[in-house]
Image 1 (cartoon, rainbow, N blue to C red):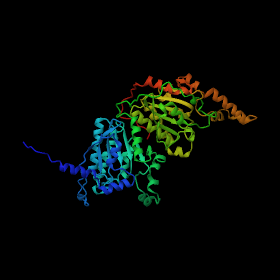
Image 2: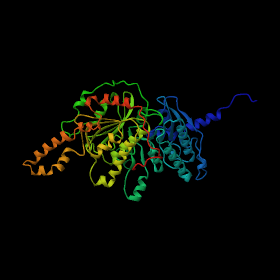
Image 3: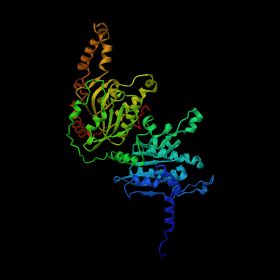
Image 4: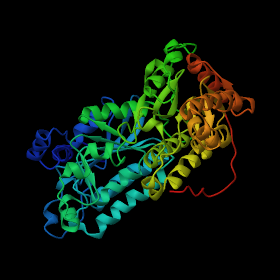
Length: 516
C-alpha cells in the first residue's frame, strides 16, 4: 500500500493552461472588442460560485494541416452547469480565442454531452455562441458534429427550454442550432448569416456589410430570427435571467409562481377611458397590458419585428401567462404574414411549457393585397388558427374593440377552444366592419339617397348598434361575459384560477401537420 503526499502539480498546470484558452494576448484582444472571455461569460451567467465545468481537458484528434501542433485543452468550448437564480441549467460557451471558436468533433462531443445531461435532468439548455463556424481542417467530422447538435436541439424541443445567446459571429451551418432553439438574444455587436458578404457579392453582385446582412438590428427588426436585442453582454445576461424567471425547467412542470405583490382585486379606472371616441383611431395596447398584469411588469418578445402584434410574458396574481395582443398603433392591428408567424411560434412555445395564454383582441381582419396573397397569407393565417386550436393550456380572450371576419375566429375565439371569452361593452364582432358591410348590403339605398354620405353614416351607426355589438355574441354563448374595462384584471385572474387545472385529451397521433 502506497503512502505519501499526492503530487497535484500536473493537474494545476493543466488547469492554468486551460483557463488561458488561446493565450493571454487573444483573451486581451477579446476584451478590447468589448467581449468577455468564455470563462468570464460563465461567471456572469451563473449565480456566484455555482458553475461546474465538464470536459476541460478534451482536445481534438486532427493530425492534418499542422493541427497536431495546435491542441488546446477544452478544444474551443467551455461546457458545464450551474444555478441561475437558484435553478439548475446546463450551458456551453464558445471560446473564440481557441481556433476562432471553430467547431470540430471534440468540441461538438462536449456540447452533445451537456445537452444529453440536461435532457436527463429536465433543465434548460443555454448556448453562448461566438464562433467562426466549422473547423475546415476536420472536414466532414465538423459537419457531423453540427448535425449531432441539431439532432439534439430537435429532441429537446418542447421538452426543456433552449435559449441561444449570440455574442459574436454565428455563420454558415452554425446558425441552425440557434434557429431551432426557443429564443435568441443578440448583442448589438453580434451577427448571424448563412452566407457571408463575400459570397453574397460573388453570387448576387450585392455589396453588403456584415451588420447590414445579418446584424442584431436586422434580425430583430427585419427577419424575426432574433427575439431580443441586448445593448451589451451584461444586458444580454439580464434579459436571459428575466426570461428564465417565467419558464418552467421542463414540459412536465408548471411555470414558477411568485408571491404576488399586486392586489388581485385591483381595478384600473383609466382603462374605462383608454379607447378613443372614434373606432378608427389607435391607442396604446402595451399600456392596456401593463395596467392589467402584476405591477405593470411585461417582458415583450420580438419587440421590434411584426409590431402589429404584441407577444410576451407577464404574471397574473403571481402566475406566469403568455400575452398575445393585436396592436392598433401599427397597421391598425391587422394580421399579416409576419404577425401570424410571430404569434404562432409564441403560442406554441407557451403550450409546450404549460404557460396559460391570454389574447387581447382588436383586429380589423387580414392585410389585403397581392403581396400578402402571393406570399401565402392563407397558409400563415392558418398557422395561427392551428396554434390556438392545438393549445391545451388554459386560454382566455378579451375583445377590447374590433374582432372582424376570419381574424375573429383565428384570435383565440370560443369556437377554436378558448376557455373564457370576455368583451368590453363597445366591442364590435362581425363578419366585417360596419362601413364595408353597409356598402355591400345597402349599396342601392346609399346611391339613391339625396345625401349619400349622410345616409351611409346613418346606416353604419344603425348597423354598429344592432348587429356588431358584443351582446349578440354573448346571447349565443360565444362571449361568456361583457365586462367593464377596469374589471379586466380581476376577471382574468378569477377565470385563470377557475380553469388552471384544466385537462384536455386529444386524439392519439404522432403529431399534427401544421401548415408551415
